[in-house]
Length: 283
Image 1 (tube, rainbow, N blue to C red):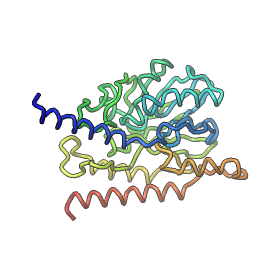
Image 2 (image 1 turned 90 degrees about the horizontal axis):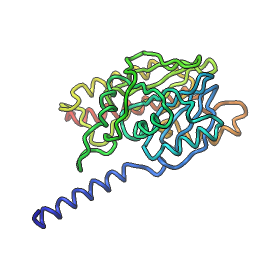
Image 3 (image 1 turned 180 degrees about the horizontal axis):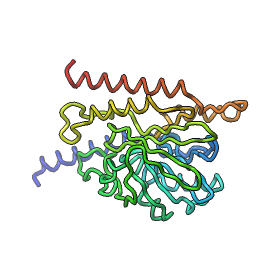
């Protein structure tokens, strides 16, 4: 390779590496106190990458494996709560980006759990997402993981008397999933993602032609869901750290019960999407 071409290649590679590192906040891998949210629903994620454990007499359900390097953190959180790691029987995810599914292959190997994924993301999960190149977005690539059940919109996942419902909220990915469940008779909603990542093409996308309409579907679904407990794939969606700090002083009031916060968040994200869509349409 000629020196000039080599230097150019090195510069591109370094730029991509630094960009990929910049995408990852320190909060993604910083441990956070595992805690009970309500009933048999627990938080076992980091400061910002949210993972949830639903415990039952017949084993447990884990939602979101986060990054590959997050697995020890999640395992430690489950153990600190007094539950067995190998009692996880089902692994679910919010969507096929590495910050929510990168650790899936390792968790499946360690626990023997079954992997259920919305059909729109299942192929990506099994293939490892976008082929890794210097220019491909890092969050689109991850370790491949076998999918045992391909879910459709509205399907239920039941274990030991607890049922989660998979709601297709596409756009962020074709199979982006918002999970809901009843906890102590209340409606808990774990938002998949309504966000438009920087660089996302919303108009005339060659890789995802229906993306704009799918985002509109996402917001219609989110606005129609019954909601008492507001949760999400990132702790930042629902102000995890501030709400967790209130647990000890809430006086019996659960800070995660936040209908108003949910409505405000969804409305804000919808406006951000519409603004970006209008920009890309030249309006």
